[in-house]
Image 1 (cartoon, helix red, strand yellow):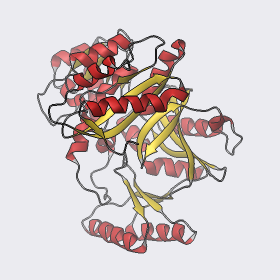
Image 2 (spheres, helix red, strand yellow):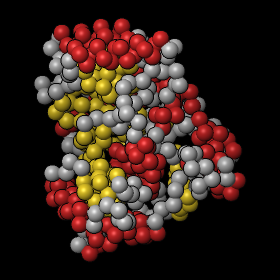
Image 3 (cartoon, rainbow, N blue to C red):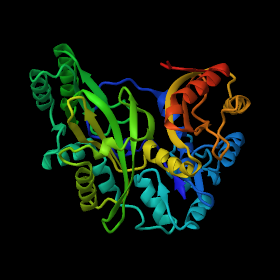
Image 4 (cartoon, rainbow, N blue to C red):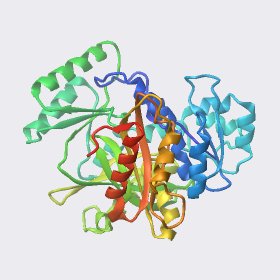
Length: 424
């Protein structure tokens, strides 16, 4: 049984932490609230997915035709501001329905997830939320990296003065851009680039003001590395501490936010490095188990142009876009295809409907309808709403065909009123 909020970090973040300068973005929050539709990618026939909002019949039929259908319910609109976990818990019928399934597969474990599991007869099947929140902080993964002397580990700072010293130290060592990361930041909204002394002074002043108000400072300071490639490793940890590597995905980011997950070249993990990929993954898995965590894990890593690498850039102890794509990839490989999941922002015309996009893809012979014929499959329909939306699709094809297939899908999107931001 699948469900979950994609803004998990907001629920884990302590209320007394200072924050980086950023503008409120209600439109982005609205988009994230609809992304739980993507969990269709994790569901198998016979599973149940409960989403926060309804999913259009045309979208469900397209998923079924592609072979990715499952039973579906939506959690209703009793409280417009409530997340899907609260909505399920507030519904006796849905809570009883959850109890009929043998296994819960939440996107992430939030405080309400634990209460829902207990109410549905699944007590003990999810890890303690205190452990989950702790290991998902970038401060935790940075301290892990420092403790095990992993290359590229960030520095945890706990005051505006410490932050200023750490940034200046990186700058004096020749780093032209230093990154300050909110320990619970996500999707590019929790990273501040320090590119000048003036920008650093502004940031320090902003944080000192919050310190005076009694807020705690906790950030990670890290150079902006000269990256060659990003990739993610996906594993599942069992309650007894054993674990299994499920696979590795290549990763392309737009700025500091996920853009594309796809098949990874073997060289990313087989090239001789210190520590080896296997050693780094084992270290993270053991530390997570020691903290009492079990469930899905995504480890983001980076190779650098000088031949070195950063084995643990951050740890996400939850599901991720990469893990969803890995599941899709496993299901289409028998047809000689690979899955490439991508997302990008878009301006959406008034009157647009996601059903029109599906119809246009089908008319152009681009909609994936199962089997070995390559195609594109939209994964989230609710994120395409005027005036601002997000296109979230997977291209099921040979790796060498991804760029051209995505370009064709972009062209179709444009023809029905979706203008992609930054598309080339």
